[in-house]
Image 1 (tube, rainbow, N blue to C red):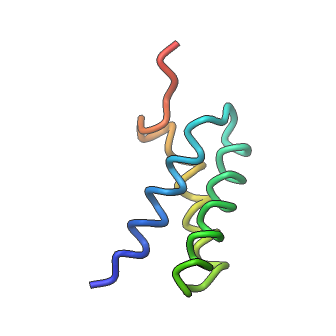
Image 2: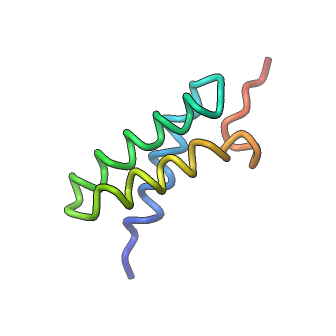
Length: 68
């Protein structure tokens, strides 16, 4: 079983948690997803897309909300 999509999702969420808007989280998630995909010899575009989706929707899922 390939664990790469899960790794990309987790990394995208971790990077996107410190941003304030959906656009900022999407860019951070895309960058993180692309870097991890490249490091694991996977499709960089797919990694960036997964990271951007994770970053965009992490606050809606309650994963990267701020406590203040």
